[in-house]
Image (cartoon, rainbow over all chains, first blue to last red; front, top):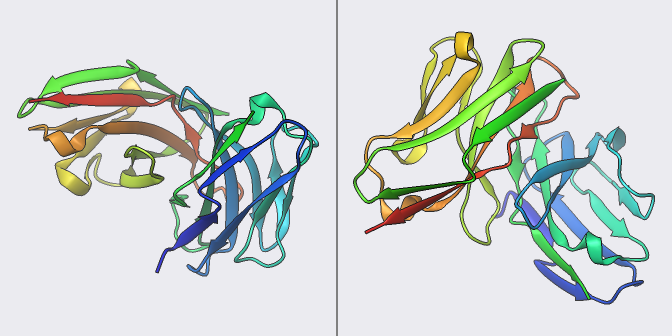
Length: 114
Length: 115
C-alpha cells in the first residue's frame, strides 16, 4: 500500500484553466504539506495543515487553494493556471509522534502549463 | 529562521570512489538535520537524520553523515559509490520540538556516478 499517494502523476493543461491535485495518506498522520519543486529542483513549502486546519501558508498566489476534507486528505486546487505554475508538486505527511519532523513524501505530480 | 547551503549543484565520482556531499546549515536553535534522496521521476526518500545524541549517524544504502556543531555542517558520505547511487540529494533542516515547523531544504546536489 502506498503511504502517501498523489493523483494525477502527470497533468498537462492550457493557461487559464483550473486544475486540482489530490493527496491521500494512509499513515494516520496529523500533518500534511504541499511542496513545490521548480525546474531547478528547488523545493519550497507552500502549505501545511494539521488536523484539517491551515497552519502554514507561505507566500503563494491566491490562485492556489488547499482543501483538507479530513486529516488523511489534502488537495490542491489551482485557478487560472499560468506558465510559471509548471512544476512538480509534492505532498507529504508527518505524524504527531514521529518526532524530528520526519516527512513522508508522495511520488509527486508533474504539472505542465502550455 | 533556518537555512541550508549545499555546496556544488553537481558532484561527479567514479564507481567505487568516495562520495562526499557537503551541507552547511544556519539555525538560531539546535536543529534537526536530514538528508533525503530523490531518484529520477520519484519522490523524496529519507536517507538519514540527526536529532540528538551520537553525531555520526548511519542511514540506508551505506550512507552516513556527521553533525559538526562547530562547523555548522552535516556532510553526507559513502565510502564506495555505486551506479545506483546516482540521484539528487537534498539536505534539510528543521527546528527542534517545534510542532508547526517545516523542513527547509537546500537546493540539492546531483550525484553523477561513472563506470
